[in-house]
Image (cartoon, rainbow, N blue to C red; front, side, top):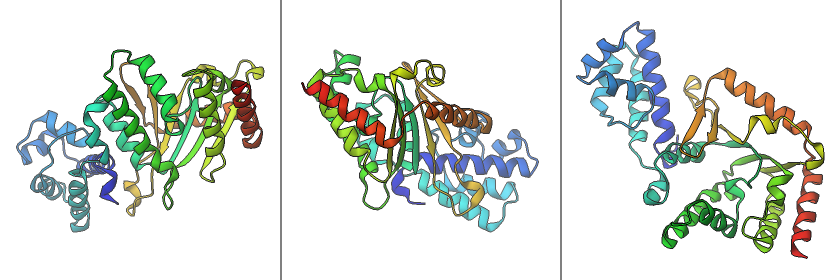
Length: 294
């Protein structure tokens, strides 16, 4: 695994492996925490992928207590080393809420992003002018320099979509409302739609639109969400399972249970039945852009 993706994914992989080994050994939390002289809270943070100090000798000790094989201990130590690395986005620490740290790490690590959006263009496909208008609407008292820093961060994130060798696969479904809501005014929105149409031509980007004429559809109940999928780990059982992210006003919701993931996959299948195909969706996007330019 490339540590350049940052600490989020290896920290989560390490957490799951520590918990698996402890449970396989039939040991309780009390035995584990005493082995490395830490509190139950600290061990819980280690086993849930939370931000916590990870000391290699503690991880190695836990592996020994759990009767892990030498290869398993080596994996634990490698993950520990990777988890110590900071992701590139930490250079922008002052420009985003702390609860976004987890999402940015997961987004950077993902190989596929599937999303449904009801009112807004997905962030990785937004133009700077569109994002600037949104940011001022959400945070009218924000300092101009911070607004521009947030735009710089977004532009950096968007390089995942256009990477020449490791482009993020994006499967986007959005409502016609998201195409017609004139964020920033007609000119800004028209430019945004032309950009969206161009991005939809990329082999790694699919954009489908649900026409307003459809009326009621499943997306109205489900609401906006992002499904993140991750690369296969060389050690199969360490592969990070898919995660659904739902953004909220005061924080984020992360869903990981297999049954939750399947519910969202099923909902997305239903939403797509109401959507136009890629070609017709692009034609709709272009037609609205032309309307706005008049």
